[in-house]
Image 1 (cartoon, each protein chain N blue to C red):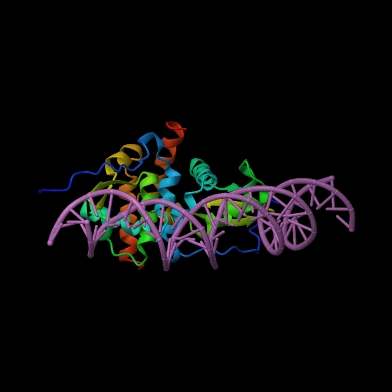
Image 2 (tube, rainbow over the protein chains, first blue to last red):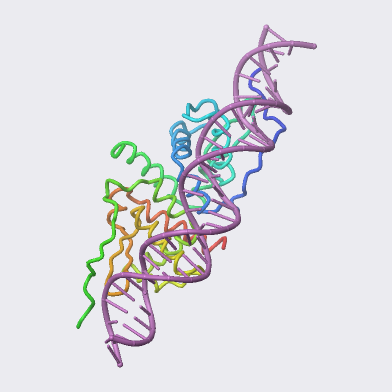
Length: 115
Length: 115
DNA sequence: ACCGTACTACGATGCCTATCGTACGAGCTG
DNA sequence: CAGCTCGTACGATAGGCATCGTAGTACGGT
């Protein structure tokens, strides 16, 4: 077959009116989650959870993805056994214009310069 | 006398090279601290700790100001018995161009629109 | 039907932190 | 000096959270 269909298992996402700036900042204040978001932004598409090679166990990885989803930063959808992750770029840009770009730029500068 | 001199009591501030993006985001992910920063940005000058009317005790207020200072978001200096607080706007703009403005704009939009 | 892969759920653990209250220090002002 | 205001220090408390391990579920392939 071509590509696995979206599973019926659905994941709760906050609506745009439920996304809180504090929640977004808290989600991104964790190094592991900031790293995830940076990788997602770099590919500008979807990545499965297992595409990331994080120095933590799978349990912890699941936890971080959930925090990102529940804060409204990423969108998650099952596709077969894989769970695909994508940045909610349009939603975030609509709510907080320029914020995501400024954050990604800031993270990039820090990664490049300070270590 | 004219104005009370800066006290000899000195407060430790992180250098620009010590300011971490994650630390800044964590500092701003608390509603009370985000509120403090918004008020500081609004007056674009210095405010004493007691200029803020926060719904927490003085102990807690002290704690929040310290977190903001230690993360590099604000600069604090004693002037008489008062402790004056100012945004480290130049330092932050130098490290993370556009970030502070985007954050303040985002906070303003959320305060105006969603409540 | 069976197995392997991808991810989850749950409990445990140890640390961090937001909050408070009380007691104290530093500096004005009468 | 005495008192007042501003802010700190310290301990306590309660909740949050990053992490792990183990056991389990969902799905696709053989």
